[in-house]
Length: 413
Ligand code: ATP
Ligand code: MG
Image (cartoon, rainbow, N blue to C red; front, side, top):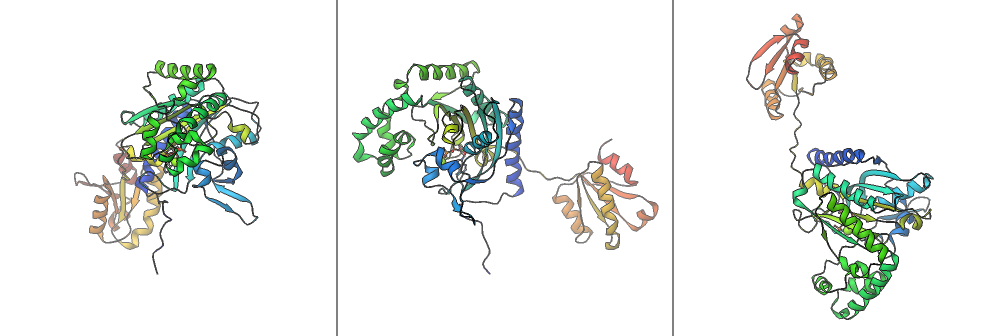
């Protein structure tokens, strides 16, 4: 029979990779806890509307990348492509709109039907944070600062640049949109098919185009900064000076837009050149319109999501599963006595691998392979005297002592 495989773009996470991913997530949880963000978890699938309503009919996530399906009761469901919509929906459903601000962190798998490449998967993990209910742009500075601190904890800041931009408020975007469309219309025949489609549907997304000709045309496109009304301008300046006060270096990127419709004002991305073209490791922005799009009370929000898979490729962390000791018996008939000894060792806080297959030479080979420092060996004679043999595998010495004494030696007491 043919061997079964995983679905394209979906991977098993073997212990060494998962170890790195957990490390990334744990650092994220730890640092966001210090900023008073509390962990939240929402379902992996939701009514499709939770994503289609706010993400808009023109976003890639909704048009091309979604995993949408009907369940047995004909409900239209979607595997979540991102975390923010679900978190805000949960906040609204819990009736918390009067109980603001709320600061949440989350992590878990997301699903997008994308073309799989290194750092681009169909099931991937995000760690993210959302700051809900603060309109003041100091919250934007707070979340960027938290993202920066997270990458600092992972020790990878030196490989990462922060890019920011503003999308302004809706008045600004309307004015800018018109200027952008006017400009791009002159180049319509040269634009990629994708961008021509977006010209009428969602022109701002063209700024995000990866097409080389599009990119060239965009170099001289109007800059949104020149179209900001006073409110939007002030907000952006406050964010920039907030970052400067934190000594966080950033570049303003006039073509940085978030892929989703619900963003306004601040948009930012932390990018590395270490991962080829999949360089964005953490991205976010302000999404004041989202709660209303979900049918709730108008509530401000700002947050980010980090790609755990991409970050875990960047951290240098050796995975070691080294036990404190290995435990074995000289003959098979003594093996049933090993489990109670193992229990006692584990109760004392030791990490033990029990060796129950192969002859003694195989067992010592295994001990060597797992890099154990000690072996506890149970033999007939030792059993009758209520002792065990403790072997120091590093220097090769052996002692016959009680189990309690052995524990002390291994724990270096
Ligand atoms: P990209 O431009 O790389 O497609 P995006 O704008 O679609 O990214 P977001 O929706 O902002 O990404 O998601 C936040 C982060 O999640 C990204 O910066 C990235 O690190 C990670 N991410 C997004 N899509 C994938 C994917 N298909 N596989 C792995 N990680 C992903
Ligand atoms: Mg994408």
